[in-house]
Image 1 (spheres, one colour):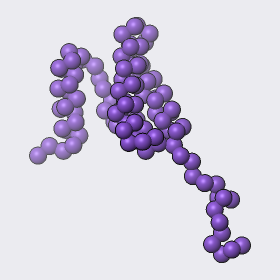
Image 2 (cartoon, one colour):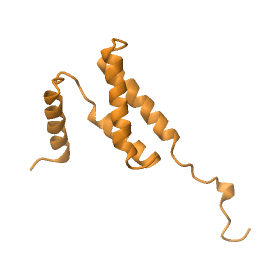
Image 3 (tube, one colour):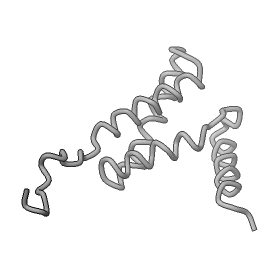
Length: 103
């Protein structure tokens, strides 16, 4: 039986071949990391939307010749991850927490 990584790699390869972009190297771990940050920082459905928009932005940048495919993907994933992380709820400051001892 295949593990999740093997199944995901095979699925990614199948998608790339179907879209006739099999020569593109997708950093699956970076995409999953972005999805995790978006899901936990915003709301769970933000994960697929965020990864889609980042991928679209990368594709447009590379397609317009602004940069290489690898640089476009890295920049788009990095920017989206930074934006999503900035949306994370902040923990209350230590001084805002009541002292259980009443001091």
